[in-house]
Length: 235
Ligand code: AMP
Image (cartoon, rainbow, N blue to C red):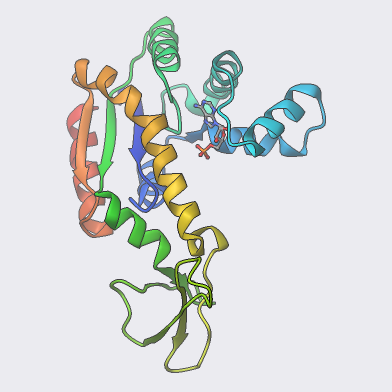
């Protein structure tokens, strides 16, 4: 079986996490997210880890030299010898070129860039409308609401968007909303950040003919099947 290096790109709400988990399991490759690698350094107290923590907290990108080094260290581990699913990297052309050169130095290359395409309003609704029950089921104010009653509570001063409160009809359980989903401004900020940090690398990969797009407004299963078709095609 040949090597399989993939890059997955998708806005908040595109189902990137779900699809990434499926692909890594199906193809036995590690999920390599530079964001996760940096977050894992939080428990370290050395100067490098401290600096990274401060920059992440300020919402800044980590410098390319550090990021490339962290990525290279991760790809040097044995589980990534024949492939990986990259997520959150590269974020700019310097990183993209580094990845190309680094893989070439190993006699390998990126097989495809998997782009989960979603219009931004749907992306917003998927995050802002999301709520989960204690048993882990997902509901959404905008579409998947059977068995749930929604209360839309206006902010008294109308300074903030309304609060969405979902209650399960059967048990009266109040659904949980992640604080970062409940914050409409935060959701939009994350979408904007995705656009500004990811768009710049797409033309680079388009020019190499590597970008394969899937309509992420389809169901999880449909998106999954299309991604598998693409991977089968490129490996
Ligand atoms: P993420 O989970 O991908 O949104 O990443 C969280 C944070 O980690 C980002 O806001 C950056 O501070 C940092 N980070 C992750 N990946 C990169 C990257 N490829 N280049 C620079 N900084 C990154």
